[in-house]
Image (cartoon, rainbow, N blue to C red; front, side, top):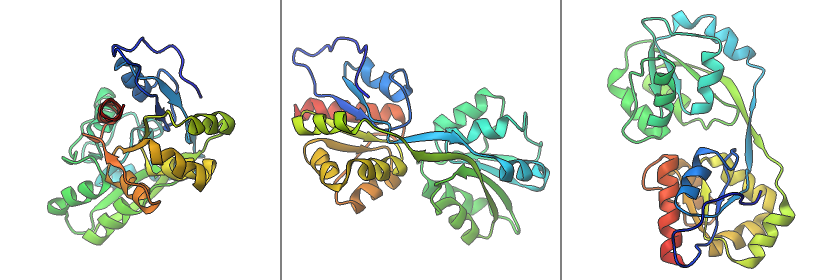
Length: 261
């Protein structure tokens, strides 16, 4: 929950801490990036990623040769697939939302044919528009909480989309007393959100009053437009990360707490 082992800040005045709500530890990629900037990190993992029973995924992968494309919307979807499919059939095309997901696939020897310029679901659907052929079959291994943007968008273009659960995104247990203690101090500089689920679950765990109090004084930093939209729907005004990556999320939070301090 609390910050541990961060390097001394290079600033003459200590910067306010930044909350990380994604499912990671103090050595996780977002926390490490923030700490490398000299920022104190508060770990409030609002969600956790857990294995699915994968029965749907296994059934789909048993017929992988029947698909034209497989779409990965996040890095979490990659391991469950690659554990069961060492390499894709030669004719299978691969799409990834974001360079981080594409990089994980390439590191495992997979060719990635499509990565939209903007790393979000809407941009992926748009990138498919010129690639559509009659009866295009797409496999979409997704989170248990996947939004309908990709599956619905591709279906509207004419694709036959098979969406299967590859992993589960669930609420995590927070130390609410510690969270509320920090909120009461009004010392938090920014709260980072790397997914819509993190927004939803943090608000549910804290309750609306404490959630609103937190984001009245701390900047809400969203990794991309989908996450920002959920914050807006909850009445907050988010700041978009300079790029839809964990590095962009960290850099934006760092710049915000510098200007706000």
